[in-house]
Amino acid sequence: MKRRLLYLTLLGVLVFSAFPLYFSLVVSTKDNSALSSVSLIPGRNLLENIRKVFETVPFGTAMLNSLIVAGTVTASVVLFSTLAGFAFSKLHFRARTALLLTVVATMMVPTQLGIIPLYILVTKLEWHDTLTAVIVPALVNAFGVFFMSQYLSEALPSELLEAGRMDGATTHRLFWHVVLPAARPAMAVLGMLTFLGTWNDYLWPLVVLASPEHQTVQVALSQLRAGYVQDYSLALTGTMVATIPLIIVFGALGKQLIGGIMQGAIKG
Amino acid sequence: MRNWLYKVDTRVSPYLYISPFFILFAVFGLFPLAYTAYVSLFDWSLLRDDHTYIGFGNYRELFADPYFWNALGNTISILVLSTVPQLIIALVLAHLINRPLRGQTAWRLGMLLPNVTSVVAVAVIFSQLFGRDFGLINAMLESLHLGRINWQAGTASSHIAISVMIIWQWSGYNALIFLAAMQAVPKELYESARLDGATEFQQLRSITIPAIRPTLIFVVIVSTIYGLQIFAQPQLFAGNGPQGITGGSDRQFQTLTVYLYEHGFNRGFEFGYASAVAWVMFGLIVIFAAVNYRLMRRIRK
Image (cartoon, rainbow over all chains, first blue to last red; front, side, top):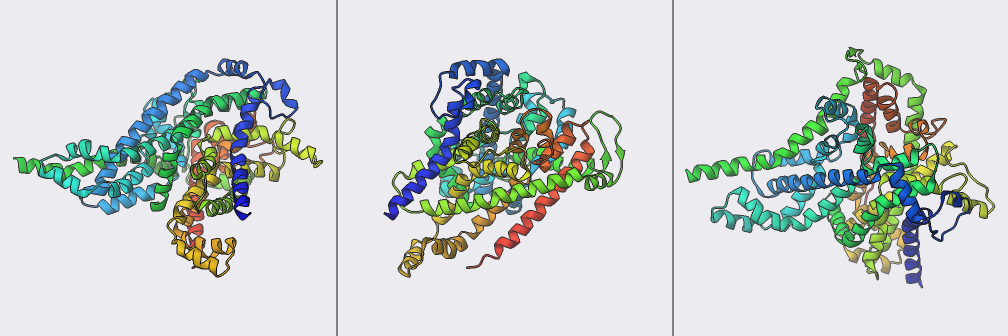
């Protein structure tokens, strides 16, 4: 009996999690004028709404821009975090502990508050209103470095590296042939987390990207919402178009993602 | 020669490997934050080339602006309304799934689902749910004969709506973090507590919470840092145009970051003034994090 109550509670939580998304999906299948009566059954206007979204804002370009930004940032964060993680977990150098502590401390720094000078800097570099302005400041983050060094310190046996050294391998070779293969699972998780975070980033792209053809998805979405005519089905259709690809990826790789988040948490 | 190369390799490589992180972070993370303090001492607008040093003038003006205090009050109100329920829900959820369950992965995936959704998407979705005329929540209230609420119009109601967005998005994620910590707590503790007749709640309070204290501190601090910087939810909740910048027609839900955005990027690009806002926020974050850390450390076994 008690067991049944537990499962019922969890089911309630699941409904609470999924319902807003389901409801948005329903709204995105309807004509805006049909929204005066609330219903939970999908309508037939989905394709028409999607067409209108692409007509109102350059949504295709925005999706492509977000893909470029998130893709580049993910590749860079994963590479640089693995490099630094390898150094921090397996190599010996002066000030290692102090530098790693610096990394941990910077995880807490609210870099969003540096937005004004960042804007000045980016304008000086003539990156204003370009994707470069969004990509470059995101190329590294402290969480990634910490995450990879935690993972590698456990998952990569030091004996393997020593054996490689005996054979005369340089540090560089060790990285490519020993470290990278061992780091792959953590790299995948970090990649997913970074991609999600970058895809969903909002304030900085909103501030620095001015012209419509340089917008990211989130900025385009915000404009569907901020239009002077409040068209909910349009705004929610855009939201669904931008969200569903992520949910599909999440469905496929979510299990690893959960493992990664929980693994990062224990040591964090 | 070979020996020499080996030495150079082992001495230099580590620094080479960590330098991309430190260089990029210094230039695009740390430097801007520090430079904010400098800019805040000037009458500095993007639209003019001359920047006049005015000392603490921006701060004086800021502390004299009732809209700043309004934004600060709103931020703290939303912070409390979102963080406290969120952490309680996350703790209870984590406790519930910290046992052998059927469909374990499915429950966890479901809890993490809201976190995959972007902040903008969450704001758009919940603005619809909380809509005055066509919102689902008002339709439900009406069918229960409770009447409609103009969620956007009131201070308390808008804060609740925005907090619900944050709670929805982050409770499941934090539950997974708590779960990870809870799994490290020895199962025997719970068994002996159960033998002594302790209820689920007593187990949570006297075994789980003390045992996962470091994680609890971490999550509280991270949530606080996040909560003090809330931007997308209030900005988009307001809907069209200028209202998003002021956080509602009467600034009833303008948070500090929205206030910063208003001054920095909409009203003549007042960079000096906006930097003063950012630096005050930074100070607040440090204070809040420190206070939370102290409070949380008091939790004893």
